[in-house]
Every structure is written in structure tokens, then in C-alpha cells.
Figure (cartoon, rainbow, N blue to C red):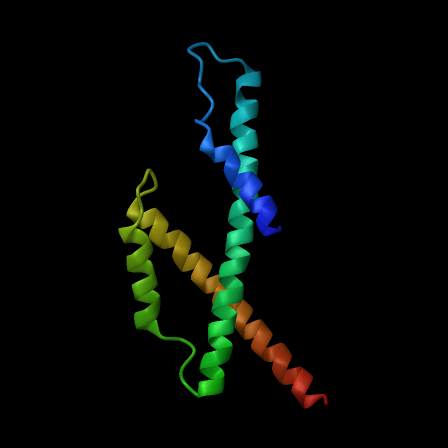
Length: 123
């Protein structure tokens, strides 16, 4: 997704959310679902951008010969997201989500590292 497309998606959130009528019909779900779909497109882009950044940091750490996995940094990330969590998700829920995001990012880094090793050993 291009930065222009993300900006267009984010523009949707400049307007107030749809109203929920006192006596809703199934059609009243449509604008809410469109909003969720737009959010999901933004979230997936941001998650992939985050993974790119983390992989780049892992690559730099490897080249510097320093440990890639630093538990204290992971805890710092978790404290940061919990600190900035405005809700309604609980702090525990945010922590679990980010633990999963970090885990998947580490898995990606391992995969990229193994691919680089096999590419360089096959040369």
C-alpha cells in the first residue's frame, strides 16, 4: 500500500464514526464494516513496515556482532505500548498482542537470516 493510499484511508477517520441508531437494521452495519476494512488495510501495512524496521535492526546488530535478541529491549517495547494504550483494549490484551507481533517478527528475522546463510553458502 502506498503512502498516498494510507493517507486516503486515514482521511476516513477525520470524520466522526457512523451513528448507531436506536433501532438498527442490518444495513447499519455497513459503514462500520467499511471502517473496519479500512483500519485492517492500515494495520497490515503498519505491521509489515514494523517488520521491515525490525529486520533492518537485526541485520545491523548481526553486522556489529551484538546480540539480536535483547530481552530488556523487548520489555521496553511492551512497557511503551502499554503506557500509550488509551483503551478500550486492556493493558493485558495490548501486551499479549505485542508479544505475538514481536514473536512473529523474530520468526521473520530467523527466516531471513537462514535464507541469507543458504544464499551465501550456495555461491
